[in-house]
Length: 238
Image 1 (cartoon, helix red, strand yellow):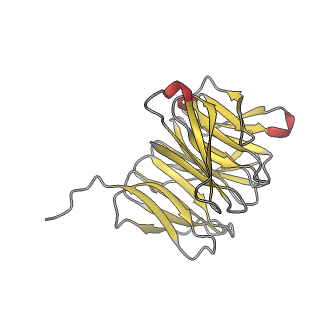
Image 2: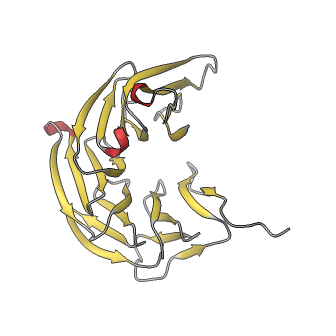
């Protein structure tokens, strides 16, 4: 069962992770060589479900969230080791663009920030009274956008919540910036994708709602299109 994908910065490798039902305590990530489709390998050392795979900027390693959100592991693409253990369930994980910080959305409503260069020293930011469900770093690494179970979005800058953005009526499933850092898209169980202009947050976002429950969003490399992944839960008229 594949839950997470990421490509290396040079576009040569694809990492895939999820759940290995046959033996969930001996899970693995698969690495595919996109230049040679016959080449792939398995990285063992993961437990239960694997989510939120993020390649490092140099493409020589990756971070992944596993063990039902209670562990974050680093892999050098050959082996895996646990670098963060969390008593709180982490529901979403992101890595900033220069590979120096990890951010986790906590089930307790807290945002967790880990400084990789300082031995994963942790900072906690209280964001919401309910569970956080999604987050993303802005491309410049200065801001984070965080979403919660009630559909509220929060802008976090330098460890402070600087504003909230209501609009969604159900849990935020995914948040992604475009590559230029001018817009971000939020996806929700309310069947909506909202497209926000980060420089004009006082204006209403563009709302796209001609689809089902949206699980994931991403922009194409040239920012000309927004791709969405959906779970078909609505009944299609016959």
